[in-house]
Image 1 (cartoon, rainbow, N blue to C red):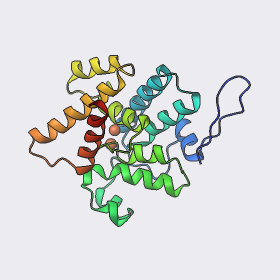
Image 2: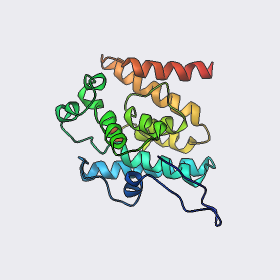
Image 3: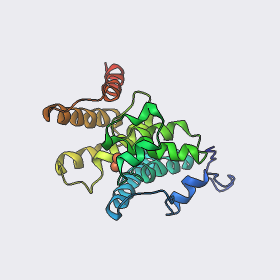
Length: 206
Ligand SMILES: [Fe+2]
Ligand SMILES: [Fe+2]
């Protein structure tokens, strides 16, 4: 279980699940299938999340969770989707190949004993969004798109990074709207989970 306490000088030491602590110490799990470039991407996402959590005034334990989510989310991004599918419960195994890596990482962490439901949901559905996302899930979804190493929409993304985390809700909605619009313009299917995520945010904003 993820049990943390504050990091003040008289606070007890932080206790983090061993899998996350290893990640935070730069030691990814042995089941990782991710290129060097992919690790660079995860580190940039983790840095954004760490910065946002700090700017939001979240406690050190939350910063660690947010950073760990960034470092974990694409650990299986370069694995063969059919291989991932064979290790997933049937309810998840019929997901399209490009989005299987999130649920696959969450499942591995769960098997290793991680019981942090919010983090597992954030990692599992970082590609498509999920109506259950709390602030960390939304932050990961946005950071994955906004991290500075990506080459598309550089000015648009830079402007959103500058507005984070002060304008958190609006920026996450804009990221979701852009990603959904891209799918529609390409003639692709919009996953029901993505529409539920969008509708949950639109309801809040109404
Ligand atoms: Fe991903
Ligand atoms: Fe990613």
